[in-house]
Length: 378
Image (cartoon, rainbow, N blue to C red; front, top):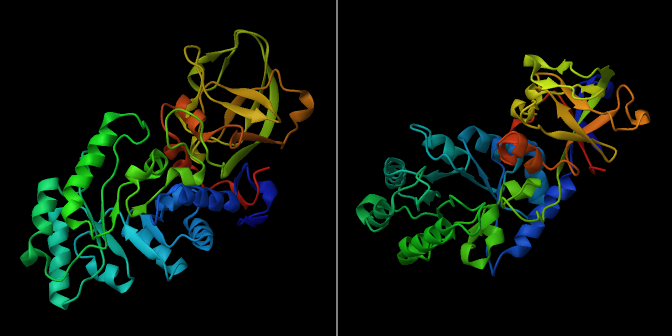
């Protein structure tokens, strides 16, 4: 168990425990699902989905991962300091005038437009060298990527490409979280069709969901993200991944609420019976999203206290959450005791559903006010 903090433990209102061994185990599980010689990379953008890029990078590299995907160049430059020997791709591509930084630090942009491709190929022509980069082809999500027609034309245009040949051709699934969605097969078929003339170049389509959907989606490289961190790749069904993170908040006070009284901002939650509530030191400033609060019209999320479910009462505020602990044994409600707000017994995907969002948002929103501890979640 190790701790990365600036202050004594007792001064923190909450604790964020991250299990590097679980992270490594999830990567190895996904790598084991891949067909043939498919490489398993890792997406560690957004500070490794909120859990810490440096820790995740070192852990995954030690587990055997050699290729990493981040979003923006600043993430890539920070990662290069941690992993001098890794292959690093920047998914958001080539910002104008930044090519020199990519070359200096051996970062590979994922070229997502014809303009970016033209800028990069001009650079390759000026130096007479093939500088590594990926090319993104859009197969239906309509975000980044050359259209299939643009891709086919550009990849066949030797005058445009010069000495450049991509180190990777990739696309991205729009509906992977719903494996039976017909969009998945349409994108797969289009990706195969448009890249077939260039099949000697490594190809990548699979995110976490693509890995779990089977060999048809694997190609040469998979780039899982959410599943590495214990999140749910599919909207339904069991989640085979190990939990990697646990969020706990300290109880500050326990008090009685008479029937008919209201709890929290806006007076949106009314006590229907005599209640005992516990106020814990965490809120939406810590990434516990306000939308997961409770009202008289709709239930909110919940926490767990030693196996006892404690529903959220009223609105989540910036620094505090009120829990219904009426049915929790009093001996578990000590001032300063920790309550599990997210973790092995409160899945990020489940609590996210109460906030009408996904576990990605929950994990990447986790604040920096918590004590950070690295070790087993139990």
